[in-house]
Amino acid sequence: MSDDVGSVVAAIRDAQRITAICHESPDGDTLGAALAIALVAERLGKEAEVVAGDPIPPFLAFLPRVERVRTEPRLEPDVALIVDAGDLARTGSVARDHADWLARATLVNVDHHVSNPRFGAVNLVDPTAAATCEIVALLLPELGIALDAELATCLAAGLVQDTHTFAHPNATPRTLRIAADLVKAGARLSEINRAIYADKPFPTLRLWGLMLAGIQDLAAGRIIHAAMTLAMLTETQNDASASEGFVDLMGLTKGADIILLFKEAEPKRIRISVRTSDRADAVAITSQFGGGGHARAAGCTVEADLDEARTRVLAACERELARGDAGGH
Ligand code: 5GP
Ligand code: MN
Image (cartoon, rainbow, N blue to C red):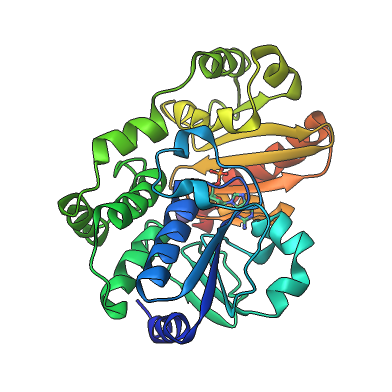
């Protein structure tokens, strides 16, 4: 990791009150990292709060102390530590509704997205880390904090979430060594894997059935896409978080280089999840629409109806395949 470690450690040590802030539509990595930071801050004798602008998805209810996560900040922190957000806007309603509050604190940006513009006053951005929780785990010895089962469970949730339980190529020897320490300290990997990737409620499988029935391909199967509409959510009585994991199911397709899930958040607001093989760059696609992420997994939002969003993003995908074929990678 970089020299930034020293500045983040100093910022945490010097703070009296720390608010850990998650990205919108929080996942196991942002929540695990934020809850871990709050536990660490409290062990260091500081006041701490965890804020996520969007509600906690039910599959993350197992996270220790998750009930403490607030949608609205209450603490007036001297350090606002943002975890796993590729840019400030990714904090969603926090950046939108609490800009003044954020501006009064020292912004610390701890993240692993390659597209991160280093928006903090202090930045620790390590794109070689499989998860933000991997970075937080590496901070613990620097802060003199030993692992316990709660901390280990929070951090393991991030690793399981972002590596698909160590199946994705972002899981490095360092990731696995940290995971071994977390298991030794009491993290139950198998249970965390089940909570995040299985244990789907029956209505979720009905939704996935509808999405799977509508799956389409393009460019001789090199692009695979599906959509989740608001009508599907109503029909199957799900909320938007029920789509979580579906894109991994699409990833089972052999031979696809770009996999997309179009999610209708509002009639003219489409959230897009992109996954790629090493023959296409997911960030090259999403950055054209103001999004970001990692080379193999990225996302963006397009303010248009589903048909128009699909047309525009699929055109960008075809250009990206052509660029890759022409030796652009
Ligand atoms: P997902 O498809 O699972 O929502 O996101 C895939 C990856 O891309 C995650 O690491 C996520 O943080 C990142 N990502 C998703 N949407 C956006 C976005 O709108 N902006 C940026 N900068 N990153 C995003
Ligand atoms: Mn992450």
